Length: 211
Image 1 (cartoon, rainbow, N blue to C red):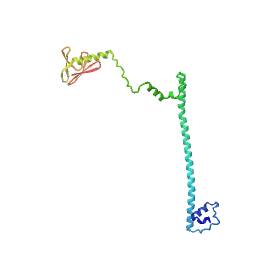
Image 2: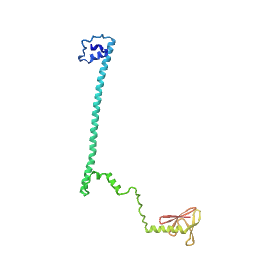
Image 3: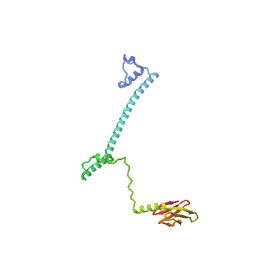
Image 4: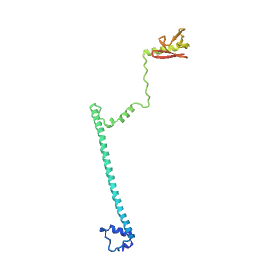
């Protein structure tokens, strides 16, 4: 009586799922016409497609779990192998520190960050570096004094511009005027260059311009 409320598809599915593939005795034998064959094929495909999809899903899930386990194991092994040299180096540094009577220092004391913070604590990071004190040698001081004296007492009174230019320089302290060419020596200085509006003297590897 229960089978009377079932659709033809459900009845065929029940026949397929029953052990041995035998139909129940109280189910009337249906005629194998075209409509019945189509319903039977549709029910059969639906049943086996569900089972096939379930098996495929389980296989994919199992393989995904296996791949994740292998990746996690490889990561742990690699991390362990990379960390071994660092641990050995820290141990050697600690032993060397004890031998040199530096005390019992741990990993924190050997850390570059801790050493950097200790250095910052000893020095102010906002203080500008002080320039080194200029220590002029006696020769440099003498050259600076001579150049200063030339700038104060010498002046250009005329320039003769030709193929071989000449310059006339007056010494206001002595009241004398000198006519000089390029390369002439004048008061321990050398006329290095004669230009249209000025002359350049060289003294002890230093230069001065006169106008």
